[in-house]
Image (spheres, rainbow, N blue to C red):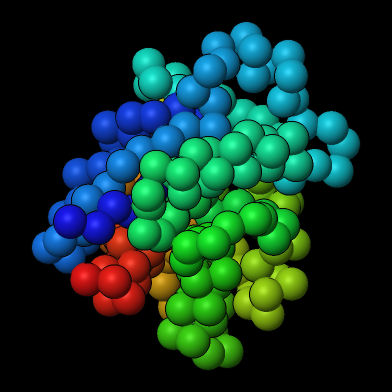
Length: 223
């Protein structure tokens, strides 16, 4: 059995995520979870990791199911600590379970960041067509236009938190019906396969989900 370390920028275990991930892992691969915020409370996060002006805003899940919003820059050292721990524990590969942007991080085994993979697949599928993108928080909308635009794609961005239930996802997806977009990208690892299916029905668009995409790719590589 080979171990795949899944490092969430929130807290482990990600009981909302592991079912979808493990269903797409090849036989012989086992997921072991680590959380960047495992040793922090929500108040700690709000006090120590609050985004400064210009910071990338990330959204993730705490162990109790609550949503945490924090600086992508400030969480990087905590992610690096978990990478180091996973490698010491014998992980064969590591997935950072976040679609945000990250600087190069120290590692000796394969390290997969969903964002460049997600963008590359979306761009290849879309060609010159416009894409719809759903992010968790209103504070991420402007950021999404900038990041997806820098990756060479024309997008329409809506927002709904995967940590606030499926109804908001459906409502946001409904605004995309007849939008003319090629398909919808759910731009957060927190979106579930159930939410993907609901968004597809509500929007009338095909949907690209990063958690199952990443699991399928790592399975192809190592399974």
